[in-house]
Length: 244
Image (tube, rainbow, N blue to C red):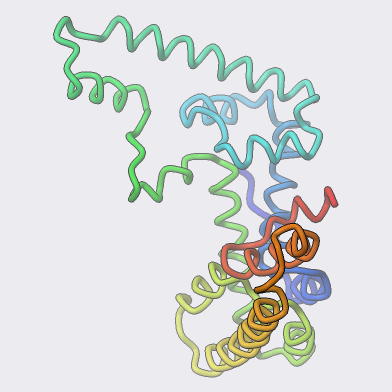
């Protein structure tokens, strides 16, 4: 896997001037570049094809993101998914031939684990990380958060950050988990608290204005309101912004 693009404070400043969490934006850009590079130029590389066969392809989110980016019509997509189909057929063949006559659940589970499949439970938060695009996404976020920590001591960035949407909660939590620095933590907490309080007031006002309306009357408002609130709480779907 190639190294992600090194983010700089100017990159963060530019991201702050656009809607949504700036870390989400840099993270999204890194993943999109990674997918385009893989589907358009790197699909023939042995290590890439081996990796994708081992991890059983991309997660659902990044598979559909590749399609949204128009990469589903590339020759690279044909090669990659041809490999994955053959891998799936081979896995089924191995699974079928490995089954014992008892076919107990524990036997089936052991065979699946040996073939590289893991049982998904409510606590299996590490499962999506097997997708190479998810790994790239995490690395991009970590790098951008590191730049943000140093940027909080930069006046130019501080101005842009205060005027931005601010961080979504997942990236705020990650930022606060970085090695502590009293000055940067105080600045980050202060700015984030201000933005969350502003949003809370907007939600309260929205409830007061619409609590007696019918769902049909508030549907058009929700189209604009919902992405903002969900984006702050769960992270921004910036691909939807491109489609809109």
